[in-house]
Image 1 (cartoon, rainbow, N blue to C red):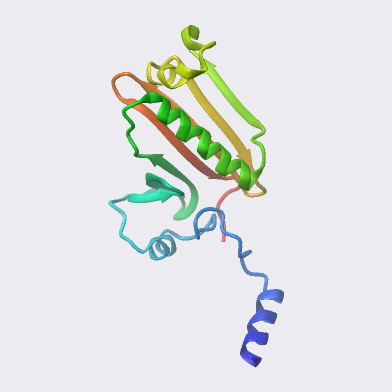
Image 2 (tube, rainbow, N blue to C red):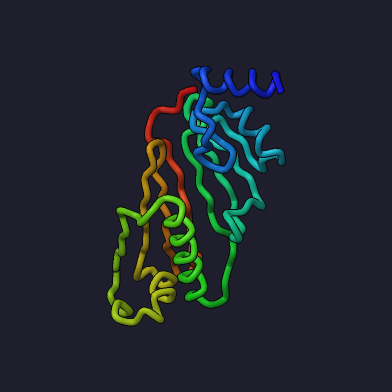
Length: 176
């Protein structure tokens, strides 16, 4: 009991890092080696500025995770969703499911952007997935917290398919 009380008081009065994570169990400004330790499985690629991990998940969505570093400190991350649906509308549904997940956590996105390159399907919501696949539509939603900018983007081309990327970026210069 005494050790518990001592630990509680040390955490209460110590000027260390806040306990809330910015992403997964990670905090902006963590050293790359700390991040590797917390991620447990080895990255598939490591450079001075990036660590890439396969077979990660954002809720129920399989993804590749790219962690970005500035001066060996965590500054950003990207989940690149790896699920490849046969029907384009299923990607569209995934996007909206993830918007709901993020909105439940961070509130309504203050930025919700629709970029129509070709308005062919603009009045046909049941074809919005096809519009993304053909490169006619790009979609993005943006949230902000005190320390992060969160962006969900969906785009596509007939050759490459549809890509959905969820990015987390530190608002400030990563420091301890």
